[in-house]
Image (cartoon, rainbow, N blue to C red; front, top):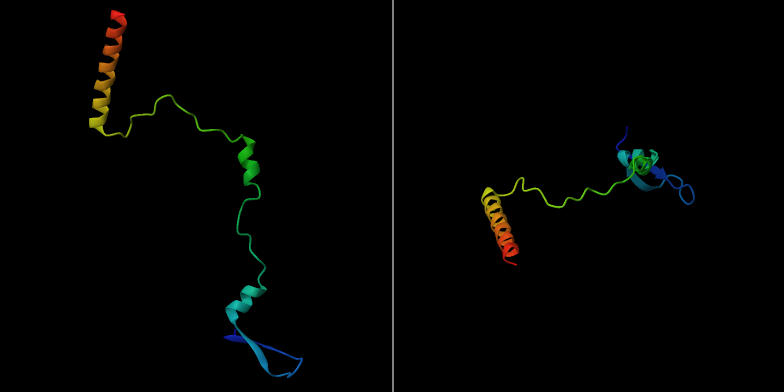
Length: 91
């Protein structure tokens, strides 16, 4: 395949080249446009089983939290439970 393709203008001067295009550009111009996104059936597939909200829990898991913080939170929870029970007993 040649390095460049010459496109001639036949209106004024028949043999005078106007544009010089590289071979790769000429090939890309001739190719049909390719499909870039696969959005055609994705929406239908997503709604088949319904789009559900993420489950919301009352308390977040302490998994993956710093051990020192977890221990402190446990002791704080026990202390506040005792204080609540003591306040309930006095009133």
